[in-house]
Image (cartoon, rainbow, N blue to C red; front, side):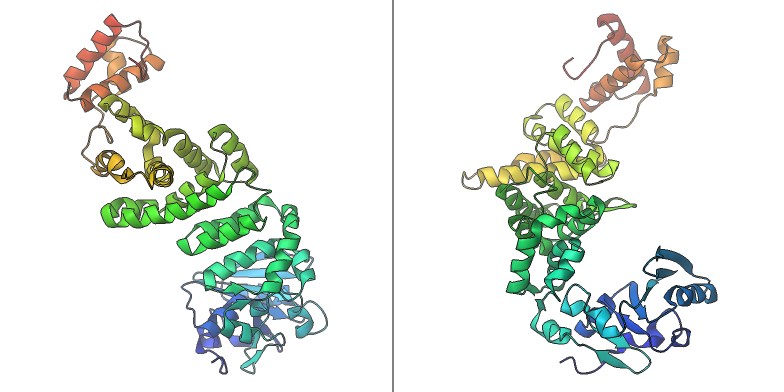
Length: 431
């Protein structure tokens, strides 16, 4: 099955010429593995091992092609060249031979090398056999101990490749699980992100939780938490059937600079403490961004209100608070209700359908109010200074508009005048 060299490894497909590489030089790692498996990549991520002068080679290639150059590890002599559609990492060979270098890697399927000068696959650890078997097998327990992130990476790679983990490797991971706490939180967060990114990762993040790899980071996660993550995937499937527009939205990243999707936000909400204040501390320790933390804590805080927001006023303020987090919030609510009410005959989707319909209707003034007047308009018309009262008046105008009581700027100003006359200029959700 894997006897021939895959054509995708051919140097003519690289972003630079083979003549830039000295002899010997070897391509290693994921690009070789994926090429052998026939997995295509939109973005090339190449890794090369060079016996000497790796950084100088990288720098020369970057200069020749006017590409970006980044020194990744000056001590171990690792550098990266960044092309428009690819990155190429160049590392100094560890040890006196290529085989010594490969023996220091994490799993056999990642310890396969390709010599582009001779078109030869070098596989001293029989990684190709494990690729054919669909098995993730450690090179050695010591290699996993050298970088405990590899313990969690096993689950991520098994998820992405659709592989199983070889039993001895699995037992070793369980035995070493507590060492994961030695790894920087941001590195752990990246691996967790991969596992939360798709339904293929759900059984593996569940397995990681069962094997003790997440205990140090999500101290409040329980077996029910992982059942909830699986329920998120089920909810997403139903959303795709009944509200495809909302399904598309929750699959989008929170921001261009944040890879976590709104569905991933819902999954993270299942893992953290249900108290938003406690959850915020957990997430800060894992170095999640402010946008992600705000989204998760907002979903945790608001999802119980989705069922009780019956009046236009209540729904108006709910949508105002939820904003772009509504999709994640409704997924969390559906997940909790799906698990609680699965056997009761109640259809939680029917309960939330009116709110979802409002949210998906851009002309709905409850979910998407349009501003009849600005704060400046109110200050001029009522001759009042800038203060929180102006904001409260705008909210009351928004509610009245949603309720159909006013529809013009003139009516909005008249309402503001009445509110100032009738009330002690103190307004809130309870007014």
